Amino acid sequence: MDNNHQKFDSQSIANRVRELFLHYGIGKRQHARELSRILDLSFSHAHRKLKGQSPWTLEQINSVAAALGETLAAIADLSAEHETPEPNMARDAIFVVAGVAIPCVGHIGDELAAGRPAEFVALRVEGQWHIYRADEAPAGPRYGVDLIEIRPGFGDDERLSIAVLDDSHQAADELAKYLGGCGFNAVAFYDVDSFCQALQQSLFDGYVVDWLIGEETADRCIATIRASDNPDAPVLVLTGELGTDRRESENAQAMREYDVLGPYEKPVRLHVIEAALQRCFNL
Image (cartoon, rainbow, N blue to C red; front, top):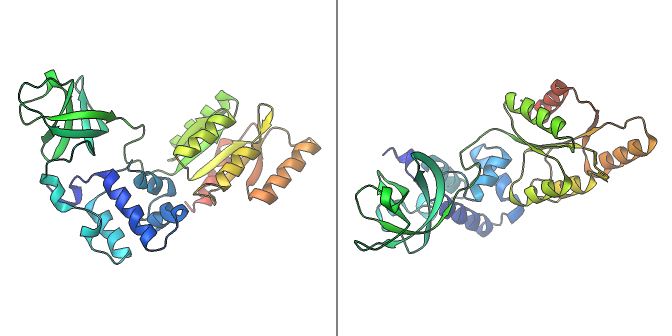
């Protein structure tokens, strides 16, 4: 197997990198930004890596080790490829069901005795863990599976991620689809609560938010962004009420307090938003 494509346990590598960052005085909120700098990744991609949601290559692990003045062995156990897993160890795996291969994290236990009943089993296939229903698994040593985690977006998407917030589903979906066609990974949200909850799990490289969401302004959303681990992400504000003094005053205050861009008048001109984001990221 090409060393650079050797399979490493993403969660274990991520945990060790975070530990080393802390050891060298890099604050927790700076971890994703530092990894982004070292590996030349987008912030959101670096954030996924540090959560164990994106695979690591040998070259990337070497780059982090070199940046910290450490050896490769300080981050990765190169012998782990051939070892029996520790009980209940979380491992990157492929879940094979109905002929479809789905990337996942499997919590893999001890080798199962012959004839021991199990619903799912794990086997090592060409250096990669595969999980099957027991009655569909190929021949070979079988290990117990305690938990299978299928994570949305587990694939290594390197596009810049953009969150779009608008209580008009049609407007949000249209803008997200357009930005997707422009090379961004855009996700639409329709209310403040779901938007803020999403930011607790995943951070984005940039944001496009309508100022008025139902009866609430986007103030809470923007405050959440500015208090996140990616506080300098560009935020573009949309509004359909430029003609009202109250809304213009609120927008002006938000621009001063949170350093947002806009406001951009609705209905939005899609190419204008695209161009603004390209300027933000120097594309």
